Image 1 (cartoon, rainbow, N blue to C red):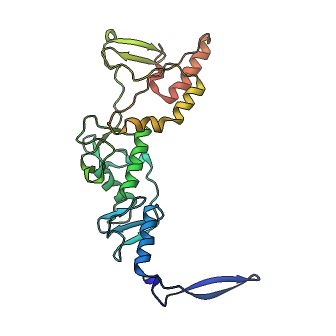
Image 2 (image 1 turned 90 degrees about the vertical axis):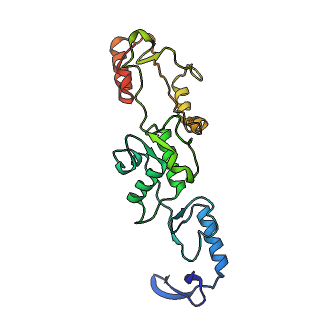
Length: 257
């Protein structure tokens, strides 16, 4: 606010004909209310990050009083890498294999935010959604609250690492082979949808994956895609080479049907 108070002068370097010189430029006075309104709009648009005591906002409409004389305005925080939320990268955010949104927010803020400052809730939500969509995390089924949730429920939104695919420990007599590198257990819920996809269809599915994940995010239900790769008439050496490439993506492909 002092910057826009009457009488503030900014020194600006000017250049004319290759020669530089400094010029004193008076900053026009602006009413306090207009400055705060402009700052509030910038915070809502994600152009500024405001902190004021325990409050921290960026990219959402800050509540009344958040943008005030006592507030600190900063450049928007950098996105949190989805790998930064794993137990290896953030051990303080995890306990017994489970993390809450609040524990992740507290721990990642201690690493990436200025001392004593929490990252905005919107920044953490974006990081968690990225981690869910990329299968770095999954929502704990039947947890206290579903995801996504409001900030006040952050302590009850629970996450874990994706569960290992069942099937290896089960009896072979209770499994039905699906083909190349995949098995399905009997007595499980039927698939939501089935389709035969060529390479172009698989690319289209990958492009739409964020929207597909968003359709079930509120229910905390992880999506599982059971993939069977077919290549009729492929000679044994080529099949082995194809399996080797697929195994680089998922180790389960190493088990041929």
